Amino acid sequence: ESQLNPNYSFENFLEGDSNRLARNASIAVANKPGGTSFNPLLIFGGVGLGKTHLAHAIGVDIKDKYPEKTVLYISAEKFTQQYIEAVKKNNRNDFIHFYQIIDVLIIDDVQFFSGKTGTQDVFFHIFNHLHQNGKQVILTSDKAPVDMIDIEQRLLSRFKWGLSAELQTPDFETRVSILRNKLYRDGVEMPDDVVEYVAKNIKTNVRELEGAIISLIAQSSFNKKEITLGLAREIVEKFVKNTKREVSIDYIQKVVSDYFQMDINTLQSKTRKRHIVQARQLAMFFAKKYTKASLASIGSQIGQRDHATVLHACKTVDNLTTTDKQFRKYVDDLSKKLSM
Ligand code: ADP
Ligand code: MG
Image 1 (cartoon, rainbow, N blue to C red):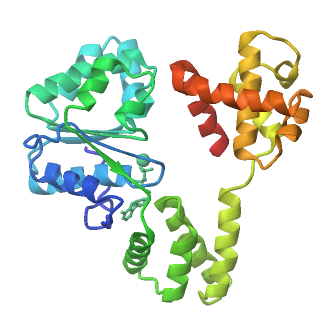
Image 2 (cartoon, rainbow, N blue to C red; image 1 turned 135 degrees about the vertical axis):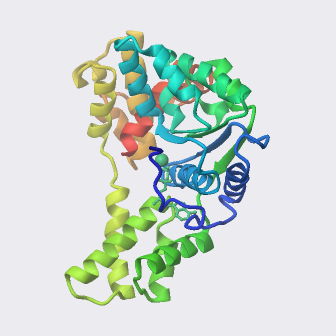
Image 3 (tube, helix red, strand yellow; image 1 turned 180 degrees about the horizontal axis):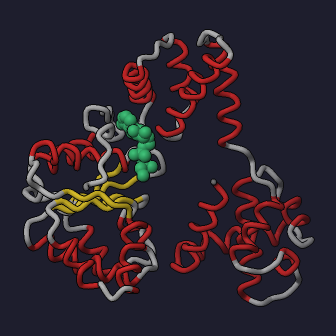
């Protein structure tokens, strides 16, 4: 079976400036799988902007138009697990063969391949085989190919063969139409001012937008209250607070020291050992980025340093992020952990 979710259709994917290119390219690919220059089609963009939805929509539409074609949707994570299993059981060749006879292969979140050389290698061979045989490959990623870290060059260059299309944050009008469409499909009525209020205040991604509407509907039915602007204000306020809770400097030090497998005392110590200095500088950098604390206050909380030391740490991190790939991976990993 193809693992496709029929609710993730093109019809349900509202168009706006933020997604027009990606949506149209997806439709073109679905009309002629393997028969356009968009091969592979790589859809990239931040969390909750519709990558998985579009990837499914392509598969759903192809299954509809070309029932005889084999379409497979799989997350990069699951693909990796399957591959590891196959190697353990001495089935590597069966694994490769299984994927080489698929007509349309959709792999979601390929950034997961980062650093996994075995999986990248096997995917490289599968990709080449499919591409040479005119089969369609669709990939999604949270980054553009140029920003991908720890992915082999030869694979990156394949990613760039076709089309990379970005999903951006939808503008207000698009957010309103996404909400209206969802409410309509769920058979829920909601006053215009409420819909607009939610769309205006929740801007980061579509998943959160839907989440806010869902809690609004739930609250109104649990408490038998009408969905009014007042209720929307209450809920959206809570929602925004919960999703943007400020992280503390202690928490940052904990996350950074866990990441580098050292304890907080080591991170704060006076030592000049390079990896410890770097961990400390990263903690300072993230404290500056994610809290409102002053440089002086950050310094005093991270091992009694002065404000100039913190400033220097922030600059060092900025520099290393642009010049040192490994270091940039630290920053990316930690950003993810801290923004959960
Ligand atoms: P991603 O994979 O990029 O993290 P998803 O595809 O899971 O994001 O999308 C998150 C939610 O937002 C899903 O419920 C999806 O249906 C919805 N969504 C995103 N973009 C749109 C859109 N343009 N129109 C309708 N729904 C959308
Ligand atoms: Mg996704």
